[in-house]
Length: 175
Image 1 (cartoon, rainbow, N blue to C red):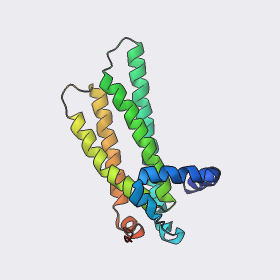
Image 2 (image 1 turned 30 degrees about the horizontal axis):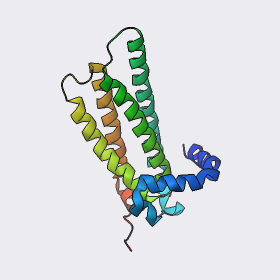
Image 3 (image 1 turned 135 degrees about the vertical axis):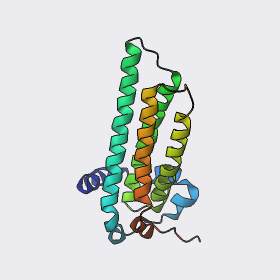
């Protein structure tokens, strides 16, 4: 995974100015503006954790795509697919791709990306489980998909709050 991410980073290097603008949007004016980046040596011990995070996010994308395909097939065969299923399927795919971007930028050492990834890995499981608990909002298969999504996100949060991650990504000092 490390070689794959490094190769993708080299391939995308010409687009770095665009990513810097996207970083400002994703990290907010304060965090992205800090431009705090953890050194390569300090990040070396987080590589294995990031590999796990990338694989979890790939699994989440696969599950999200599977849910979307299932909804399409169900709809095409005349089954009832509530609008909430369509909204949630598309929203979760967008969220997961965004989290993958944050993981990549954190892998490169950007504190803002680590901070956002850690924050969202704590918030999304709670929101997802609360919404899944609303009776009748989703069919059973979508509720199960949401629970699996939440468990995977909790796994990402667990990895990100490990001692070596918190030591590697200390909160930057304010000016």
